[in-house]
View 1 (cartoon, one colour):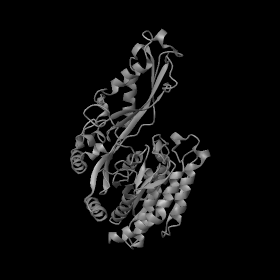
View 2 (cartoon, helix red, strand yellow):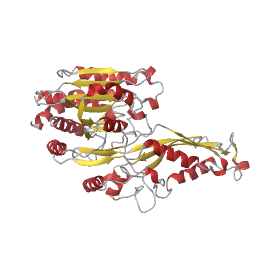
View 3 (cartoon, helix red, strand yellow):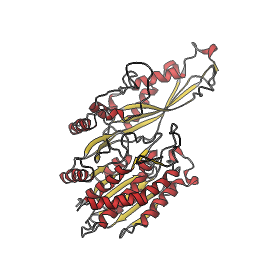
Length: 477
């Protein structure tokens, strides 16, 4: 099979149909249920699912069955099923995964841009969700259509596109349970919701971190009081919260202090991190939008390490705590001389791929709530935890297919790297289909800034990735 034929097909499909579709998709504030309690009434998730279904149904893929599956009280899911071609039979299948829900707006967008304002500039489509992960459904069906147009035999292909991934996929187990009998014997899982180290090769995700977290609240008074009268007598709820966080991680280094939240790094993953570090170099840390400094030896804020291998391991196989939200703190403009009664912090703990998310959450709760300083009322309300994922050993046929597809599409062999994010679906599928191989990849590369302001999709990379994925699917037997 000549990949150039696939590239011609996928490029044309992207230019003529997918990019315009994604432009319209960006306009829709299809926020995940965790960020839009009235998602059902607003109808945005339903709208983007219907749009993807209608586009797919118009592609003329022979035998395609495409439907919106709904379970009462849960977000909708798009499911497709395409029979094998070339006499391969339907005994085994390739399962495509993606999602259509989005993160919330976030502040800091450049002038003229915004989360729901699509802008194409320098080959990039800016706006919320196109790269994370609205493109996935369109790319998956285009890869299948490209193989059929080239008359290349391929296995049966099925797809599951959910709409609550950004909320931790709480509805996904129910859909997986319902649809499992229709998935067949899954030989390869193609997940299109991950990242890439650069835009010069096909990147394969080897692992995903887990996630634990919740809301830490510290209460010392029933109401605010004059700080002049109370400070020095009444302890600050913020200072107590600071003390409690110090139980979890070192305030100077960020190293997590709870042994149960760490895991040994497999030798294969260490070697892959070394190889990825050699490819990417300083790009591992320079890709982030560092704030400028007006003093000191550095021109900008500095990372925890400038060693690319250590940086890769820090963001893939070591736990890290972030405070991602707060309550009880008035704005700077509205702050008066009041000793506040309560401080609440939303905590997010990224976990090594092999650490159990529920046990990690329980460990955090025990440590945070034990022996509260000053007898303050301390509570840690845990949120849904997610265990990470470590890919099984790659089969020789898949290794060869990935390298060949990357060389043909990008002119370089595939890169292998762990990702710091969490996709609960991967762990679920790894448990349900222990014999399956995995191609987890995506378009979230340097500066793409998923979840943040100025998020973008690198259009040319997405085109090449679509053709590369099609070439790999053609090798599944």
